[in-house]
Length: 405
Image (tube, rainbow, N blue to C red; front, top):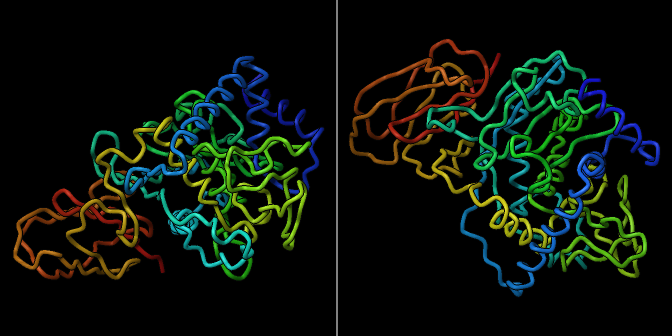
């Protein structure tokens, strides 16, 4: 039997005891599936949580994460049908929305009731498209692979290019996010530190749970935020707490007995206090999960320090349409998205010699000019397919989005 068959059987067994009306987080299934094949897994995870708990306790609530934790991200779009092949524009929108949520700058924070507003996290971790491959070559952090596998997101093949998936890019330095079909019942899962072998560390999300829906055209990105929480060490806010005696290890999230679904109205109570069902680590609808708590953000930052110390510490160039996560920013690009032409505005108004280059998503140089410029420079673009490109000036880079018709 193929690895996909084993996964399907394990998933079927879990679903027999689980009432699901729609796709949901597969974290519980993943842990059970792996624990059935590794009798020591749950003990290792428990010891890891104890280490994290001890580190948080030792910090006495004064833990200060290293400044500017920015995690370079590589998206692997492993698609079988055209609908699964999410566009560059959708992926960029997902990343920007994810950053707003982690910064506590999302526009729907008004949904947080007064009792919890002082606990809203406001910064600590951000994400960017990886602008270089491990060898230092210009690269866009979006990899596309067409596959023949159905439900490849539940298959071991997902993590192997030769098997129809996509190899992870150095998981110790990059967050790998696979966008792939995970079937009818699971939206995605994020791997706790140490849960799976290093080449499978990251996040898996079904494209159906991300694709824009409704007339607003906004991406549905909260599954990605939820699974990033797991990847960074967070548990669900209720965390197997039927008797109201255990919790998620976070001091400022109240004890909660069970998950919530849909879009409940405040207040809701299950363990004698108001439940924080609007938290990103619950199961409510995208539009109704709106916050991390301060304690959760501190725990995620501590998890990076303890278990993923190389994330966000390398020399990778970060790419974002706004450029705000660049380490150095000697020029701006506008308009962006662009079509036909762009203007580069140089920070240094004096004339500086250098090389401008434009790379496509595969890392191929599609345009190059050598010269000396300062101030502003208009460039007529060659005929380019719509998508994401990297424009480099000497040792720095910016993201350029080429618009379609």
